[in-house]
Length: 225
Length: 257
Image (cartoon, rainbow over all chains, first blue to last red; front, side, top):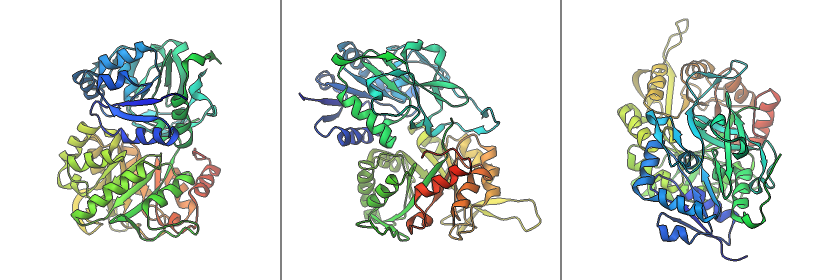
C-alpha cells in the first residue's frame, strides 16, 4: 500500500491523543499526525475531525484557527474524512446548544437537546448526558461498517443529538434509540460522521477506525439496505 | 434495545502502582495499573476509574505518565480522580488521555470550580465524587451528609441537596460512595443511591460496599444506578467483570456482553 497519512485536526479543544493512539493501534503503518496547519492537512490522505465540549466554543475555535476553511477544502478534495461527536455536529447547519449556534453548514442537519426528565416507554428515567454503550443500527452497507455486527454497542457521551428529520434519509448511515431515534452516523460521499466515540468503543470502535484507515473511495459501493 | 448499564472497575494507584492488591493468577505484573486496566478491558469492563492517591508532587508526574500509557493501550473511557483541584490539573489529565476527571474535595471547598471546569471542558468530562454518610438516627427520616478526606471530615452539607447543586453547576455524572458501606462487602447503600438517582437528571455511579454479584444488580434495580463501581471483588479474582455482566443480564438488566 502507498503512503497513508492520517491527520487528526487540532483546534485546541482537548484530548486528541486517544484518537491518535487508537489509529496507531489499528493502522501501524500509517503516519498519524495531530495538526491544524493547512499545508499538513492538504498533504493528508485522510482526516479525522474530532470535537468535545460545548458547540459554541468548538465552532468559535474552528473559525478562529481557520480550520473551517481547511476542512471545507479537504472535503472538496474528495479524500476521506471522519468526524467524531461534536466534530460531526460542527459540520452541520445549526445546533440549539448555547442558545443556538450556526455551525459550518458543510452537511445538512440540525442538532437538538435531548431534554430534561426523559423517560422511555416503560417509564424508566433516562439520564442526560446520554452516556455509555448503546446499540447502533446500521442503515446502509457502508465500507466503514465492514466486520461490525448490526446492533453493535458503541460508547456515546452527549446531550445534543442530530435530528433524524433534519437529514435526508439516504445520508443516515446509522441510528440509535434514546427516548427517540436519532442519527448515530451520517455519510455523504467522502465524509463519514459519527456521534459516538470509536476511539473509546473497544473492538467495534477500533474496527471502524481500521476500516476508515483503509477506506478506498475508488472501490466504494454504497448500497442501501 | 437500550443504553447498557455500566460496570466500572476502580484502581487505587499510589506512585504509579496499584495498591489494595490486585491478584490475578495469570498477570505478569499485578502492581502495574496499565496491566490491570488491560485485563479488565479484556474482561469487558465498560470504563476504568483510576483513583490517584499519590501524595507527593513528584508522584503526580508518575501519575500523568501512567495515564498516558493506559490511554494509549486501553480503548474504553478512563476517569482519573484524586487530587484534581485546578483547571490546570484537569487539562493535564485530559491531555494525558483521561476522558473524565473526578472532583471531590475541591468541589466542596469551591463549588464554582465545578462550574468553571464544566464551562471550560464540557459537562461530559466532569464527574463529581460524593462521599456520603448517614447522619440520621435509627427511626428518623433518612438523612445523609457529605464528608471529605476519605470520610474523616464532616461538612454539614446534605448529600441530596449537594448532588442537585452539582448537577446544576455542570457535573456530567455523579460518583456516589457510601462511607458507611465502603469496605464492608455488605452492598451499596441503596436508599441514598435511589434518592440521588431519582432527583438528578445526570447519570449516577454507585460505589462502596460491593461484596457479591447480587449487590451489583441491586445497585441498578433497587438503587436505580446507571453504573456500578467496584474494586476488591474484581481485584482478587473472585469474579471476572464478564461474570458480573452475565449475572446482571440474567436479571433482566441491559448490559454490553
